[in-house]
Amino acid sequence: MFDVDAVRARFSVFKGDFVFLDAPGGTQVPDEVAAAVARNYRDASGNMGAPYETSRRIEALIDEARERAAGFLGATPEEIVFGANMTSLNFTLSRTVGRTLSPGDEIVVTALDHDANVAPWLELARDKDLVVRQVNITDDTNLDYGELESLLNPRTRIVAFPFASNALGTTVDAARVSSLAHRAGALAWVDAVQYAPHLPIDVKAIDADVLICSSYKFCGPHLGIAYGRREVIESWRPYKARPSANEPVGHRFETGTLPYELLAALVASFDYLDSIGGIDEIAGWERTLGEAFLAGLPEGTRLYGSPTMEGRVPTFLVNYDGIPSAELSVALAKEGFGVWSGDNYYALALYERLAWRDALRVGIAHYNTLEEIGRLNETLGVLVRGAKAASADG
Image (cartoon, rainbow, N blue to C red; front, side, top):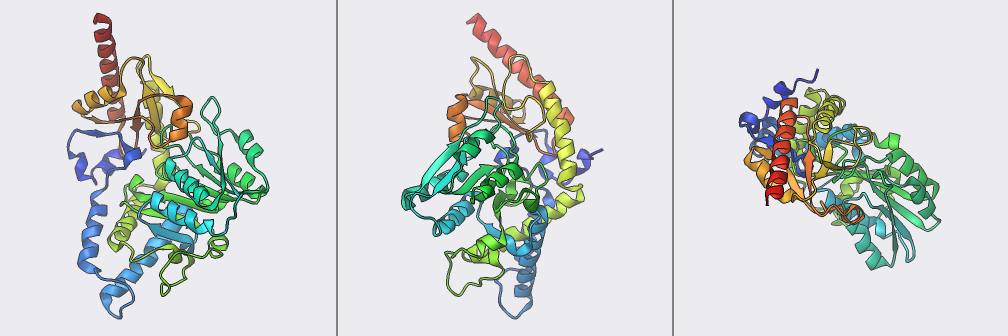
């Protein structure tokens, strides 16, 4: 059984009663990850390339961070690229691959995508006279694989898609999409920001060419991590300072000095995840939490996405007819629950397709408890019934 009490004891933030259910916006951080930042500043402040101890510590830290990130994604260390965040990395790498594209070449995106995996391609298309096509979703909010296949043609160069929706939690069969992309001669380009905290990733198994995630979604620092298949990215001409090294190959896409204190925090976050059983253990516990949430939703809930834990991560979008989600979010905060209210959640095409206006997004993480989920459902039910009663009286 997953020992959630032992997990929570490692977070100072959980000494209070507030319930954090906002994981898609960023998870809470265990004390050891925060401590790693301070320790790096004390023990290894400076820069790489110098012939003394602090510099050697920085170089060892970079090597370890690459190895640990590679292990997390199923890659090799030289295929890892660090950046400020997923969005910045995606703009950088899309601009770089853009040097290989010609007017009329096509890029495919999906209606499930966060705009961080759409806007870079739209901007590139504007600059390079490319064509961007969008794959829709089915009525059950899954990616329309048939439509995807029909859009692919000899001019398709990139198929950009999410591993999991940041709004609905819906997952995508990444291996299937990669296979379709490769049959068309295109690259498979994966946004794994919402998937990486919840389910294990093996970039070789899904045959991705590029995959990007953010460590602040799995109890780490604000840092972007990208995987690029070596035989693909070593053929690209990077935007970089000329003296900067070309090896390891991933390093050539890292501009300027890396945030070493965040790399130290990243290593600490991987230590933390490993110590609690890794993503496999996390996935099992989060499935239990998700099932409890779905089973206890109050009457009248409109749930977008899968009604079960099949084909999803524990990110849920709900609303209630006649009750503004913004009001519910504020009321829940007063009762001690951190739940977001928003409109598009950066998934612009999905928002247009499902037209939910505004909705509550509940994001469960492995540090949540069954007791917290039960209290959330109970409190949400009381608030919804109260709002409906007030509306009827009015």
